[in-house]
Image 1 (cartoon, rainbow, N blue to C red):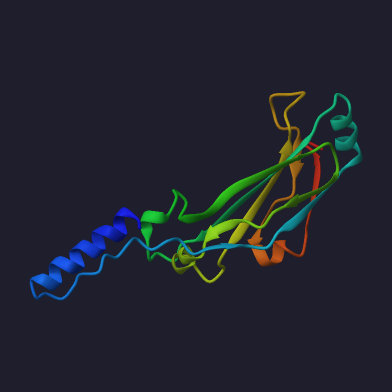
Image 2 (image 1 turned 45 degrees about the horizontal axis):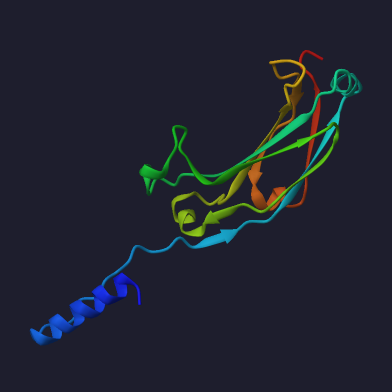
Length: 163
């Protein structure tokens, strides 16, 4: 038996001896973990971007951030732009145009009580891997929407900055 169990048993025995109703020890509620759907991000490149990333060898980074827009019921959970972070970010690196697979994010379902009707959302950012330059080389589409829509597949097109 755990020390918490022994403590609860001791309090129950002492309360019974004193003629009092036993006090139950309430532990902090465990998070209600759940896993959202996985999704794929397919990146296409303009011909100039494909040529630039191929020589010298450059990669493409894809970042996924999981959040919900706050409904105002728990300001303590909000970040500086009024969103509630729901799951850790995920990143993938691909060698060029292609598809990256993302696992469904694990998140505390009870936090959904503090987000608006859009629920769990994902923000996808795509940028160069910065192996050949300290700066990002790509100007890519953005995806920011419900995770249920992401689960149908995301297509992102990139071109060189200034192209």
